Amino acid sequence: MFIDTHCHISNKYYNNIEDIINECLSNKVNQMILSCCEKDDIDESLQLIDKYNCLYATFGFHPDQIDKITTNDLKKLEQLLKQNKKIIGVGEIGLDYHYPTDKEKQKKLFEEQLIIAQRLNMPVVIHSRDATQDTIEILKKYKVKGVIHCFSGSLETAQIYIKMGFKLGIGGVVTFKNSNLATVISKIPMENIVLETDSPYLTPSPFRGSTNSPKYIPIIAEKISSIKNLPIAEVAKLTTKNCYELFDLK
Ligand SMILES: [Zn+2]
Picture (tube, rainbow, N blue to C red):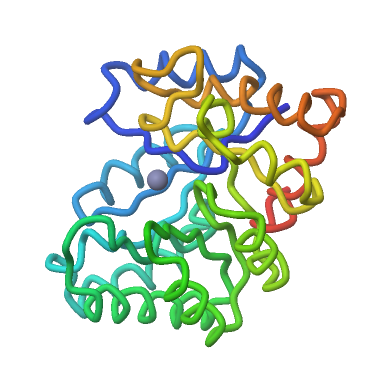
């Protein structure tokens, strides 16, 4: 069986969530971890994880939410993280410097949530775009473990994160022709890899251009299986084990 460790499932993106879930289950993607990272998605995500056994979630505020989040929202987040057994991590949180932004405000929101994760001893899911140096510097200040979501950096960056105890979330990018990720993956141990789709974004090839779904996890696993020269069943087993250990799932 496979787990999609990072996807966004919402009526905003899918007409029929029930169908999406059933398609996942028939493709052996038996569990999915939703990333609820916008204030407006909280209620829907809570309903979904309550309704479907196979769904878990991480909750946290994405860096693009900096102008919406108040101290009260952070308090509410911490309450949810404490109370709801199906919320298993903090994220996605981090830094995104791709578009012009207030970097200091992003760092503040990121650190406030790292403090919560540290206090609750929960894993974090990190979003880092065009901000590798600052992400590493900030993470070094806290005692947290977690996933670098949608990792697509250099081997050197991969090794830094691994040394810090992070796993790398590998998704559809590995199937893209122009990606260097396959070379990086060939040089890092399986124990540092978890699978993710980041649905509805980053659809793997050959379906690039259409809406992504967690049902495509086996395509990503297949690619890793060929890079690592391992049977796909082994990729499924190892990445599931990594995910279970990190998020303390049973
Ligand atoms: Zn995401």
